[in-house]
Image (cartoon, rainbow, N blue to C red; front, side, top):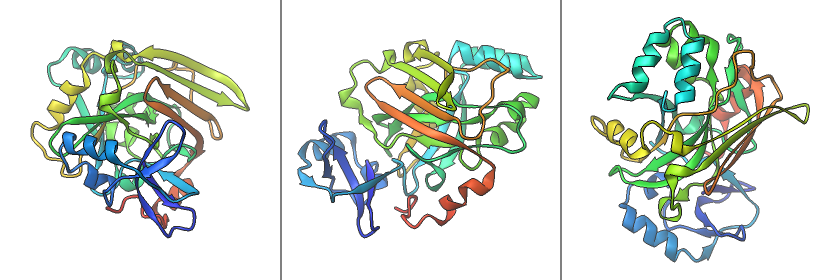
Length: 294
């Protein structure tokens, strides 16, 4: 986990114990932790014993040059939904079965929000939805080091109008939320069978809720990572959001002040409220904690 002290005087990277206590790791940033081999990182996590400062605020688990990428149409439900909403349905039918997966850049580190912070919907989009996804974290060498929870918030109407509008549907202020912790890969026995659930609360009541399992993934995370590293390098590692199997019907859209809750068994929980428009996210640009700084 990344943290900053309440007064901003200290920041660092830590391990959280089962009892909630934080123990500092010997890395100046999370990006630095993702530059080392998996075996070295695991040794550092196991050996950490120095307490972190009290009263800290947890930050998104990405900094420096770490990028967040996304994978699309990796579940049968996602294929079905994209075909229903799109004017070019055949694109998604062929993509699901293709050898090459859909991969796209979702966010740079400083734009990512975390638990308790707002997620955003575009003012120029009629349909907006959450996408509950397992995020896999890889180091500079491409080794899978951990898992996290991602909300890949999406403008459904913009992507549905034309698949080439994907960057505008996926990449905008408040569109990427990640839970504050990374669960070490060596602590998750069956990443291929994790329960994933998403609930949207409106005025305190659930208005949409569904569940699935990573067992329904069309492509294993390691395969997606292999394509990502095939022709590029990630010196500070990468978070790859592996796609969603939970998609509301076409008559559903997120509204301002909705609460989105995502749970992934053994990995974590993410809870965010919905804000509308770019003005709600100027604080990311001006954030004094330096959340994207190495």
